[in-house]
Image 1 (cartoon, rainbow over the protein chains, first blue to last red):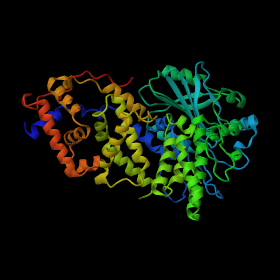
Image 2: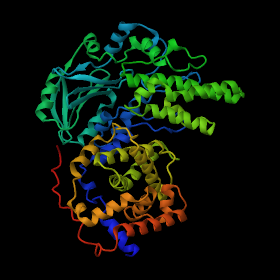
Image 3: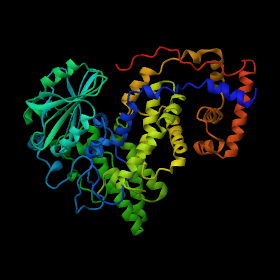
Image 4: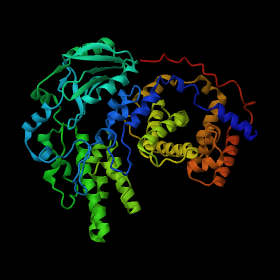
Length: 364
Length: 188
């Protein structure tokens, strides 16, 4: 048998069918949008305003799924408005803006109520639905995911001034059908495959879009929409799962997360600042991001100063991130731990802070 | 380097131009179609994160294969997590990739069995040659070896395959690649 014959035999045994891509029904396009809605680790050096997730997606056809499907590192690396006067190693994101006088500095339930007041507070009125994921809230964007058996639905909200661009984008998905959700005019868009979205007209500073997982019946979606209700801040907070970290719980939860982490010099544990309401994953990312940024800043300082002892301490602290319990716990859920470990490992290996790590980890 | 928008445009082009090749690469090397979605998603996620420093157009495909190869190795070690990316692709692949009766004819089974018994790198070199259509110098890029080493392995792989499947399978090129499986309707 010649090489050619043999190769032909192997070719005949190729398990791939070339007609496959044509039958993916757009799944490949959806994956592309999902990927592009996650942050790059290597963002430009210029501190020009970074493009926010909504803007990045606004022009993309049928991109809603991308926004709603990505909860991993994408969610925690939310872009932030610039904030001057930062201290080296301080942390600017991903979730909220550690602005003075808010967040972790106490305030408890009152603080939670205040935060909740500022956002749309829609809940699914049907029984059986549980909130499984929460992130955002600190800025004009947030997501809550409700799950009931195999069905799930996300409520995403965005700044009201983004409404027109989102609406225009969704017109490319399907013709809108008017409806009313929680007393607000809304448009239903059909994605196909049992997948619908309802976009509510802006109320105040935000607008809300609900998006189903796939495989829904239209009647189920309509029934769910009819059950969606706007609630007061107390009811909203009560509906959040116990593990969600609201501003009032930040200090207590941060202490737990920080328990097995070496604390960088000058790092004020009591000032750990995570705005909004966040699932443990997103909260863990916020806290570990702040600690890692501070350690990298300390490592860079020690390196520049020729302080070998401090350099060694910082390197060891950063390397210990591989053992931080919170990162290990988060690892099954998303990519944040890997983003930290990659950054640290590259830094140690090359003896240089990796380019773009600030944006990657949300350091200021 | 280009602006963020240029990088995004380029990434879209890279994705569009290489998606099928990467999907094929993954599907050929996993047991479950859904796993191929994870490998493809992870591979392009890596590319996206590095979109500022992607290799030039004429090298990108090989680079992606290299990334996919590492992702796949990680997958085989049980290390690829189910990202929340690519759920729709996972569903679609599960729905449309069906058992192909053509793959169960003795000739294919014999070839597949022989391939599975090759040392891993030999198998990789042979399948990259035949299925992906790569040249030895290109395979060298993907697997991180010299072109000479690839040629040696290719030659060894072919000769082992010959030993294993023999010359008695008849002339190659039967009409075995006609998909006769009933394909489920799209949608769920």
